[in-house]
Length: 492
Image (cartoon, one colour):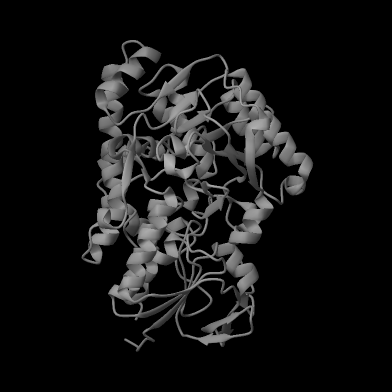
């Protein structure tokens, strides 16, 4: 066993980088996080303007146990740092024909809502929840929480019966069809596929655990918005002795003779270290940061881009709860246009979040803070995504759909507007090709098939974040920070 430097430099202060920093510090490493922006958080950042506060990325907290475990590892209590507010009903789905469907973690409310959509489905709903709970438990107890590069060894922790239960060879839509006849419930639970970079007609049935996890553990908004969670985790890191430098963009990860030697900041400052963790997207790291660049770079399939609108609205917006997902009339066509035809769907799927409905302090008294997320192709697939014409088109389609659904939002009431296009996401947060959620979760981009959390060509270089294991989303990147820290210790 060779000796290892006890000093680690982490490039990027997203939730994955913060989590890795906390776990490495608990293991006795000296940790410095270098964040290019003025605030840590990565995609989970914050905009404050004229009394309105907007979370830039994630709009709800799911799987709270992941964050509780992070604080517990440090001997702390999550709720001493973060005040989670329950959001229930959590998500409302809306179709053009006027049908709506709301999710709730209250089983009686959920059964009544499913029964309203599909009379007689209560036994099937209970069967679905039972089946998904088994998948969820197996996934997090035996698969997600492990560093394993060998696919056979990864699956070897499961019995043959457990492997068959994962439904990896059945599509998500097919899996949901085992339990629900009405398209509305299948489309609602299947819509999560958009944020995994695939269609529910192609993604593995295993991903039925996504809707189950939110139903079982609820959805939450931290006091102060999602950035209230980031502040709590940042505070924990600082208390443990993690050094955090903001407005410190890294221009190069320095490599010599196949070993990492440190980083060079845009200012010209060089920080030497034999251990570097990049919280920047893996493909961005490998194509833009490593110097000299590796001879071969594997570019994974990525999740879609997004145009995000942040609207400070005078007065209240009737008809919108905290989180509403607007689905197209032709559900399959929407996925086909986005993922295969590489266009912004004509019948636009999008979601809105009104965090001020849960935490009124996020907007001036009587006003509304509203977030809109519109999925788009990647920059390489539709290069004019940054154009004012494309932004205007997306905005008008959103306003038209709201009007069609009886939510009459007069554009003149929008007193504050900020917009991030895929190009903005790329430039500000290093998101490869403008991809909003990192590498896609197709069958051969999960588990040991996903980009590993260490470099195969540069010794001492590690990865954390949405494009490496275990995957995208706040809980996953926080778990990923723990896995990356364990990987570093195991290779000491």
